[in-house]
Length: 287
Length: 120
Picture (cartoon, rainbow over the protein chains, first blue to last red):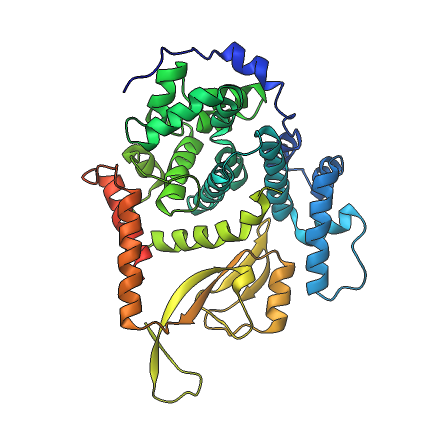
């Protein structure tokens, strides 16, 4: 493999250029805070959602769809009624998917293959359902799954030619994408994604899961790392989208930590992932 | 797996257990697994396995934000069609795992499970 000498990407450059990306949706922090606060109620989350017109519109749309199915009279016109109809769990998931889909769409340059959307959405769904399967926080898992490749988004936006070269080398089988990126930038997208997540002050487990999703074994003290690593592998194994999905490795230690045997019982997990991925894909189709 | 046909006579036919996105589920489809919808540990809606879905059920499930259901579907495929689908699925799974060392326990086990899942 012949590549140009690396153009080192530093943490300072990543953080300086971060400000050229859309503002990270702070409502994600608020969603996560309601998970950690046993006193949190629907009103707390509604107060946060009400500050985001796009998100509020999405919540009204879901509530009115539910109202029409239940033959309720009249349209739902206030956010408290809407959120009480759709439930706190669904409100959190809607908030996460809608706000992160908007952020990722806004951060990408035009013309990018829809593969990035598809893979991010699939990894988010896999992480959420896998977390439920192993009794971990599904909301934090979905956030980490949706954002796990945000470092690639940064590279594509700010170093498009070198990143395309890394991608092509990986597609030709010359190196893994992480190795191809390290050859060109000195770091890979996992490290860059970790820097970005830390700068957005996402919780430490989410940052760790993004940073170690390709090489989880040194960070398995944080359970979310294993979930997101396996979730990304599953999204590729189940062919759920992305550009040329491939499985090249799977951490034995991560599987062991999650108690995954890949016996017949795994097939119901695969089935749920397949179905929910198709259901949720509409959130991520470019508009 | 087999199930009595809708006339209740002796004829038996194969069924497939499939997880379907909610928008693909219709009236009359039979649940292969029970439904239990809960929010914050409060159970809000249940349906038993082998229940045939009604229009009212679907309205209530939609109102609860159901994303998928596990359905028992009649398998009307011919043996030739099953064989062709299985071969195509196996080829695709092999392509996805082409760069993996299937001698390693975890990735080898995942490969075999995905292959089995895509084969029925």
